[in-house]
Length: 85
Image (tube, rainbow, N blue to C red; front, top):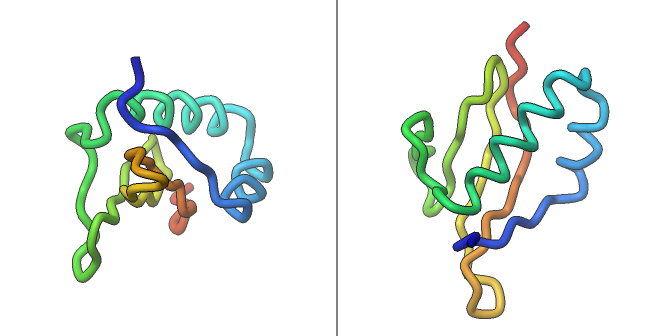
């Protein structure tokens, strides 16, 4: 059972659609796993922020924010800031 809901920012959805299908599958799998464990070993807190983390998926970084939305713990996927090819 998922402990966290997952919400996608609209701009993040648009960014992901532009990526190759190989990356999209990896990102979706990684985000689904975050619903049960929001702090995997490859996550890092972004300095100078509260509740904002980055998670590396292959050569991509996913930025997530932990928020309380209607009293439900929620992961908000903020974007893909760095693409390393």
